[in-house]
Length: 276
Image 1: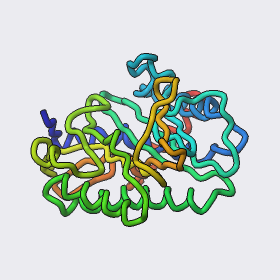
Image 2: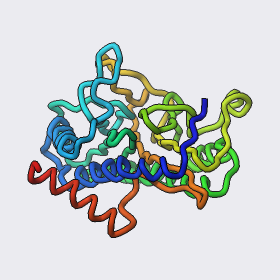
Image 3: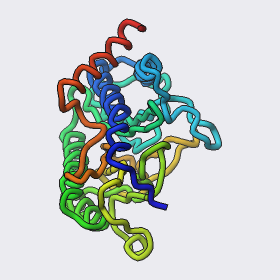
């Protein structure tokens, strides 16, 4: 069942969205060649804990419960990379997916960083992925059904000679991290016939294009979580949680928009730095 939120609920979700944005801002500030992915994950966990938020990824059930608050996926890794002793290298493409729950509401987003002297291919795949997410946000203010948005997302990626990952899709967000509906970044007949949904006020979804430089095919590693491209090509992942208001789409995991929100972000970082 599609769970629509009231406008008041959507604004309550903004706090989780701001903290999620702050976590990515922290990652952008501290990520560098020479640090391990576990070190990066630990700093995000500290930010969440010191702001009384729960990292929603840690403990997610699976054959092995997910052991970290972030998914950190490097180069050919598409999604669900497990932080550990891997050292981030100059030239790496690093996708960080994270989400938290605070005051009963969730936020979820992903951002891909380019580390140092990266290849032109790495720059291209990140740009195309980011542009695809921005296109979706723009179209959410114009389109009637999600299939109208997804069709244009896939068209944009394929026009650049890249492929949309079809094995993983976006999702609804609310009191839990994963709610209905399923939010694919491409269109297929069964979706249009049975699963398509109308874009209307109250809808809150995580839109998350994953774009591969080569084949769309992926495979899972022996850790039971990490997904990689089948041909070893580069992959990028960008995501925002977006609420549909009467006035149109609002990026809940976007940067602060008002002085009040900027002050709230300052509090988040003050707690992180001073353990208050």
